[in-house]
Amino acid sequence: MRRVFAWSAVLAAVVLVASPAWAAWVWRNGKWIYIEDRAMVAAPAAGEAGETPNAVEPTPAPPEPPVREPLKPTPAPPEEAAPVVHPEAPPPGMPPAATADLPPAGADEGEPIFQEGRAAAEAGRASSAAGTFAKLIKQYPTSAYRPEAMWLRAEALFAAKDYDEAYHQYEQLMDEYAGSPHYGAALKREMEIADLYLGPVRQRVLGLPLLSGEDEAIAILRRVYEHQPLGDLADDVILRIADYYWSKRRWEEAEQYYDKYCREYPNIDPAKCRHAELQRAKCAIERCRGVRYDTSSLNLAYDRLSQYEKKYPEEAQAEGVPALKQQVGGKLAESLYRVAEYYARAGQPEAAAYYAGEIQAKYPDTPWSAKARKFAAKAPAKAQE
Image (tube, rainbow, N blue to C red; front, side):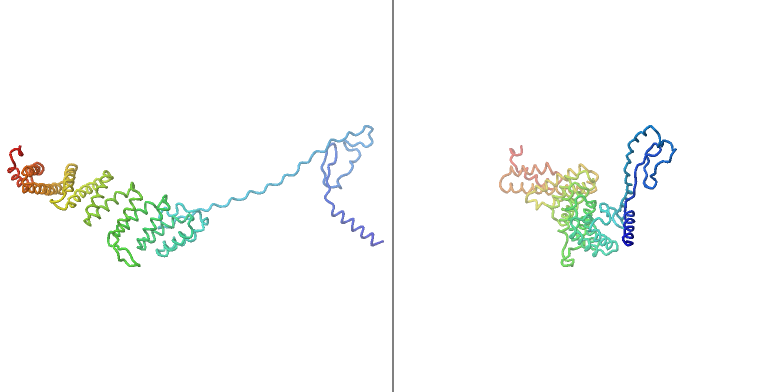
């Protein structure tokens, strides 16, 4: 029996401990009170206001207990915004636009290779930098660092004097990224490479400078013109090509490019325009194979020299244009004299007299004008009239 009583007491204690907390609304002193402890719920003492247990009149029913509003959950504190990571400032010595369009640090998988190549370039290890940038260009075709890597690789190759590979890298940059901020600088670099090939620099074969780079230089200059035919460098490109052909005595090509400059860039630079006009006339003189052949180029040269003398009288005197014009006139007069001489030998004095009159009318100051008088004297009276 003692064991049964002991277990009953333990069970009752467990039930009391496991019972949930008690709470209820209680009408007390004419109002509802919310009490959470059962021990505090007791009948009001006799004589308290509003409590008359022995009164005859029935106590009115208490009003409905108020509805307790549920507790609102406490809002969680706002999360702190992630700090904005800005790209690193360009180190000293780098081009101003080197990091213009680069993504934030850590946002591009090609960034580690790019930073490695840039560090090598800044340390003066041009060949190593070129190789590192080449890896990024090949392995990460969608990387935002790729166009900048192309530019820096081309610059590293240029610094290493690998001009041929540098030129092709500049070309790839402009072909694939026409909106690159380095577009104009790349064109200028290509012109520098062309000038080097026109000078003492030779093209490399198996790493050895063996071949002349002149043909490659002209091809590069033409490509620069194709990139921007209306750009700031176009007129210089055309004039350089023309001067190159002149130096090589390739008169037809030189005249073609001098004429192109005169037609397309007449107002860019007065000094360059005068140079092109005079050289164009000289090319026409050089193209003449001799007075016994076609003299159309001499006639063209004479007209061009006359126009030049009229447009630039002071410069024409300084350049010796009057003497050059007289020289061309002498060749044209000689050509007409040979024709008159031919007709005189062929027994056609009228034709000979006609060409003699042309000489005396157009080129009276030449020695051939005096010589042509004999053909006019031998012509019949009807022909002279």
